Length: 110
Length: 114
Image (cartoon, rainbow over all chains, first blue to last red; front, side, top):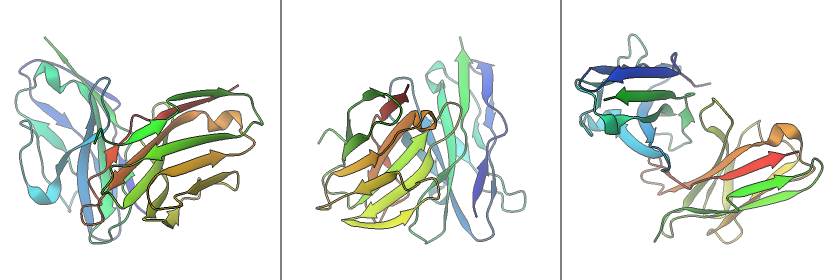
């Protein structure tokens, strides 16, 4: 069985501060990890995928298989980053469903 | 294409009544998913279809729940004999098989069971 854990419910920072949203996973095989984001009054949408190794809106995330973590980071938070963030997992190559964590609210204060 | 659409957006019903939700996916997407989200939780997988075939169902999907996608286009999720514990946001999402990790979500159908 696969499980995604987001240990914190809320992270509140000031604009310009660094951000790290934590995600840990449990899966016996090789996973693919993702971050989804939901901005206020918008739909849940994909933010980034670990395989692509891209920086999206200044966010990056590195898959650490040793620590089974996939933390989302941004060096300088912006007010428009305020949103709900969900970490998600699917088995590599399985073309199967996504399993989501409980999510974390990021609040960036001016 | 305006994306994934769900109807109704809100439904209030009395315990014991049946409810049905409809989802219209992005037209070229052959995968369609149903998730449920309760307060403080992330989306929980219920079931998914590839074209008209229902490929997987979660244990969360009790016998009172049934989902269909009869022509491989829109889908319906029916809940029979609703219980207060069924109160939740029901999310529909669609994707291509080739990029099944990129889900396009609807705005959800919020169910309140009194």
